[in-house]
Length: 397
Image: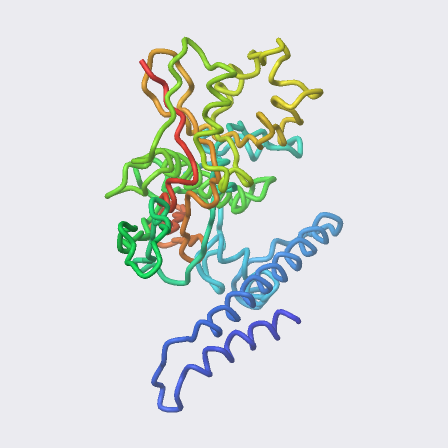
C-alpha cells in the first residue's frame, strides 16, 4: 500500500466508529489491532521514503536551501517527510523551520556531532542491562486497568483408599483459591533534573547523524534499564514485585559457591518444572562459577563436559541455560543478598506491558530558546505468578 492508501485506511477505521451526527463510539479490539498494524506499516513506509530522500540528497547537489515558507512549504509538508518532521517538531505540518540545548555551540551538549568534517561514526558507551525479561512470560494489553487471575495450589492433597461400603476415614481439604494482580506503572524517561530531554534546533538540522533516532533510542534504553532492576528486585506496592521478592530461597552456606550446592539448588525445584528451567544471575557471579570444578576436578565452564558449556550467548550450567542479567546482586560470601534464581522462569514470573512506548515531542514550550523537548513513557508491571516454579539463590552468613 502507498502512504496515501495507508492514511485513507486509518481514516476509514475512525469513520466507522463515528456516526453521521458526529457521535463517536469506542473502537473495538479488532479495530484497534487493525489500526495499530496499519500505523506500523505507515511508519515503515515513511521511513523508507525518508531514507531514499536522504540518499538522493547525498548524491544530488543543491544550491538553494528549501524553507517551509511560501511556495517551498509544499516540499516540507509532503507525506514522504511527515514522520521525520513530527520527530523534529511534534506535528506533521509546522511553520518551524530552523531546527537545530543539547547545543551545537557546547561540545558536551551535542556539538561533538556537528564539526566541519566528521567521521561517519558515533561512539556510544555500552553497558549491559536486562536479560531476565526475555526469559519470563510477557503479555501485552491495550489498556492498563488491573489485570486479575485466580491461582490454586492443591499439591498437598491426594486421594485415599476407602474400605468397601464405608466413607473414607481421611481425605484432602477443600480447594483454596488465591489471586494475582497486575497493574500498570508509568515509566518515564526525561532528561536532566527530571525535565524533558531538550535538543537544540541547530543540532537537529546540522548533525551528521540521525539525532531524532538517537534520542528516542536512548530514552527507550533509560526506561528498559529501570525496568530491568524492578523485574529482579522490585519491592511491590509502589514498584513491581521483582522475581526475588517474597519467594522461597536456596541458601548457599559455603565460603564460596560450590559444585554440590549448585546441584542441590537444581533439585530443590520440582522435576515438573525443571524441563524448562534456566539459571539467571549477573556476569560477576558467572565469573566466580567459571573457576569451579566438579567432583572429578573438571572446570564447570568447559566446552567438553556437561558443567557450563556454550559460547558467550548460549552458556549452560549443569545442562540448564544461563541468563545473564546485571540487575542481580553479585555473590559475596558472608552476605545475605539474593544473587540469582533457578527454575522455570516463564512459569514463575510474568511482565505486563500496556500498548507500546509513547514519545511526546514538544517544540513549543522552549521555542523561544530554540529547543525541542522529548519525553518517552511506557506502562508496565511485573509479578511472580508461580513461586513453586523456581528458587531464589541466597547468600547465607
